[in-house]
Length: 360
Image: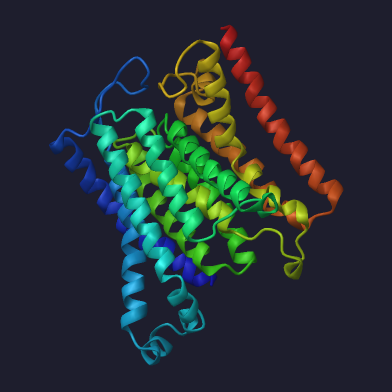
């Protein structure tokens, strides 16, 4: 399974890398540019079409894989890719869900592309996100906290997907930031999926990682292309969905019940950025949906770090909290408490930097 996932990472990377370069030129030709401004950190127009490469590097292999699985006889798979034979029945069972995921991501991607060109407004985008989340949650029984009952569980899960989608949309505020954080989080969730033997979630995460790595070749500071909303909405939704689909608490593999905190711990940094910036804007009497330079990455820059250094710090904080998240289910209760405390400490450091930034 690990070899299959590494192969999928490579496939998505090989698609995303040249396609990002192509979309950079297409963005310039079509005028799909992110113009500089008071709330922007770049000084010249940058194409905002990188999300197209991310989207197709994920969806292309999913669609192609489904076609191959249903068209190629098992006897040929036994000769070409024997490692996949045992998973073929499961792949067939996931065909409908994979098709629905592709359709939902296409809607989010197109919505983001339109918004990048012509501002659609926050409420229309929220409506699309809620509808997309409802399709996956209600249609395919993707649930958090089922002990709350059907209505409560559905509501909480839809809210989770919308929040994580917007968390990565908010986090896309500096070269390499959202793509790098998403890659780290997806890698940690991939490890959890492999531990629990969930091949479908692992495959989707592997494709996401490969797509992001191919994009980051051109997005790392100084970026020559941005993912735009056409990319961030897709990345956030896939990350949030896979975080829900992974099984963390499973006595058969030796995990404990407190493993259910894994998603929140792994995504602590994006959640902190979303929460802190929203509260700051509301306190200032501003709309939480209007972008500015008050994200904690910007605060790090105002404290003297270069933009690449600030991005690296956020990556490191994400890795520090995320590694604890994937381990929390396999340690004693007191060790789990230490992991939670470590996560809180990292967030507290960021909060103190944010507070210091407000005074300067």
